[in-house]
Amino acid sequence: MAQILELKEVSKRLGNKDVVRDVNLSVSSSEIFGFLGPNGAGKTTTIRMIVGLIKPTSGQINICGYSIKKDFKKAMSNVGCIIESPDMYKYFTGMENLQHFAAMDKRITKERIDEVVEMVGLSHRINDKVSTYSLGMRQRLGIAQAIMGRPKLLILDEPTNGLDPAGIAEFRHLIRRLAYEEGMGVFISSHILSELQLICDTVAIVSKGRVVKSVKVKEIVEDMIVEWFLDKPERAIEILKERWNIDGEQSRKNSVKACIGTVRVEDINRTFFNEGLVISYCESHGNSLEELFLKLTEGDEIV
View 1: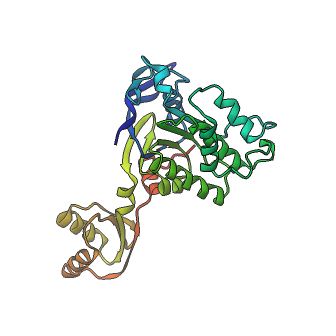
View 2 (view 1 turned 30 degrees about the vertical axis):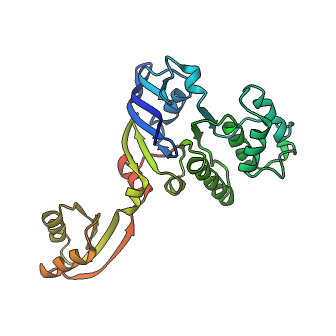
View 3 (view 1 turned 45 degrees about the vertical axis):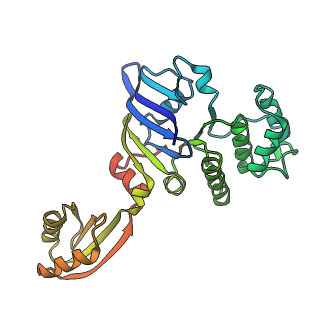
């Protein structure tokens, strides 16, 4: 897949503080990329640098191969963006809003406007005033506006803020369609961890201005965490390390928890039994983005 967005050693210094430090990340076509960080981590600053609202102190940002420093117009011609709630003229109809924005870009035809209206599911209300729209409908209209010019990169900052569960589900379906059918690279910043896990292919977690982890969501959810309730937790931890190089931790008085990867639970249980450990029972559950986030950011508050 073609690389749509690339950040190389991007830093931003404000006064005496390094808000963003040496950030490296990339987004490919047809990829949904989640950007997650605790309060003050530099997440919003990074997004503002990507869309050209502020300049990086150092590093390179390329969009579709164009440097935003050297070829800003060409780079930005490939970007569609919504920062939180889309800003629309409330006393225009949805169609009038789209026509107003389309007038700024000669590439956008009437046929393209009709196409995106249908794509976002607003055909039945597009001629109503925006003041009568629900928040979810305004969000869909904002996405229609952002994709009219067929951008290669769609940037969404907190796109599900204020949406009800039905609206979030509709949003998820739309973003998948844009990425997988239209071939867009989608860069999403959000504080709703469960939603990012459901929608994203890749997530980057930023803490204290640095990207501390970039990982495929599939890899997170495929890792199995098992908890054993047994009589000798210290010995169980030793066996896990000695036999499979697995790091276990004593999560409660008589229990051990570990991420076992591809190792079979049955093999571990058999070894514990052969080593004389008495297992009361064990339970397993999938890893989650929330657990990874809290571990890497030490439980800091998310924005």
